[in-house]
Length: 70
Image (cartoon, rainbow, N blue to C red; front, side, top):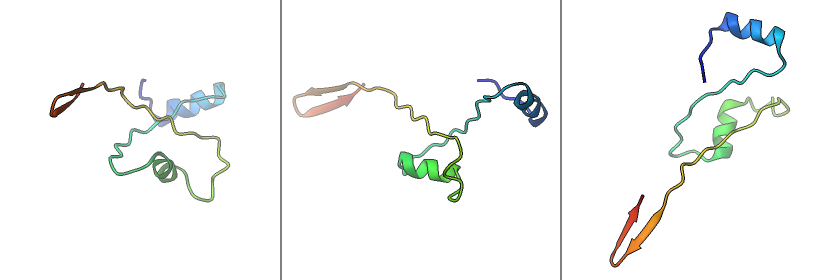
């Protein structure tokens, strides 16, 4: 996804009705709900927003006395 400055963002908001805005958060200690609450003000729960959660798939392989994540 490309990055744009605020002027181009304003121009896009005039010409369109959907502008994707995102923020990457590394949340080793956050649940998805807590991460969402960090992004949206508590009194602004009706804002049209959502949290897209992506988890990379892993393959767990078990052997005798060992466990390997791939």
